[in-house]
Image: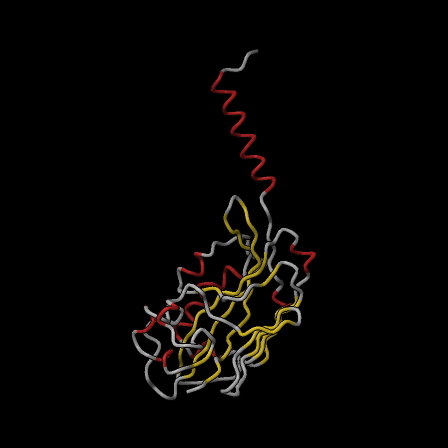
Length: 233
């Protein structure tokens, strides 16, 4: 029996699509138990590179919030309405039992989250994030023993940034109302003021990612937690 030209084309299309499905990369989640948060100043993440052979690297999504109240425990989340709303909206994406295995970066960007400017390679085994309580010190990230200043996103409006403002520190500039759309797009809108009692916090998630068809594909994100920005005001 001879195949018609249309049937021949259909078989080719099905074969291509099937190959694409078979080869689609599965990017796993970092187990929540491998993330440890100490109060609101330190976080440690342990990674087994053998579980992430299809990953290109890891990224940390974050967003900054303000509160006149402070707690060193996990209930900081419930003290900040905007932060709590974001947490609840993203909770289903972090659930290891949920069936959804891949996310888009839009999942976070649509809620005003950005990615830190530090590069975390696919062979990384240990990450430590520290927010010092001493004003003179800069929050830092330690990646397999290598220390770097922890930097906010490179997509912020850097030409207008005063020197040093890319760091995760609670500065006067960070507290200027209306600056969210200029320098501080990574700050929850309407949540800041010139109030000298304001404390700044960041909600962070980590996700592995790979590359498929010239785009990034992500594994299920894992909650890092709520960390308090170093106050230099």
